[in-house]
Image (cartoon, rainbow, N blue to C red):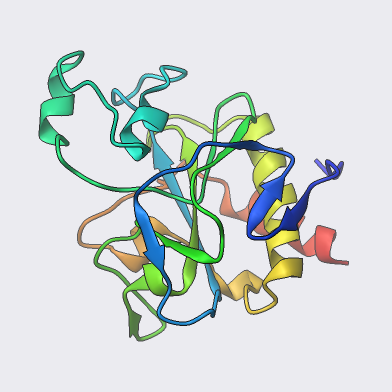
Length: 189
């Protein structure tokens, strides 16, 4: 898991990756980026590779194609990146902008984590192991983010479940924090 694609961060965008602009973002209250939040998402729940995540983040989800979608109709959310099961990376919001991924949240005594965090969604569920391709991409991207945003340190990488414990459970019990964090430590050396 140590091979690194030739990724870079240019003007807040991961290069190369697929970039699909979401309208669901705004300016950060300051330029500080000091937290990385890991999530999981699948749409419809438990289904992968449907393209519905992109539609959801771009406010183009056809709510008639699945009964669950009526529950999220009108919801406006985004993340900076989604890492699909294959390892494909899609960016929706530049890193220097505020994506709407964390909602009501708190980290280290500070509320509104969207203000100072980058959100990465892994295509998956709490009950499904993530793929090797997803871990490789996440590790490589995290390494690049830590170089570009030095306030993001290993102790400032967290899960959605940790910043919104009353509301969220992702990335869930099957996310391998030990593998991820030990790989980050190796990458940094």
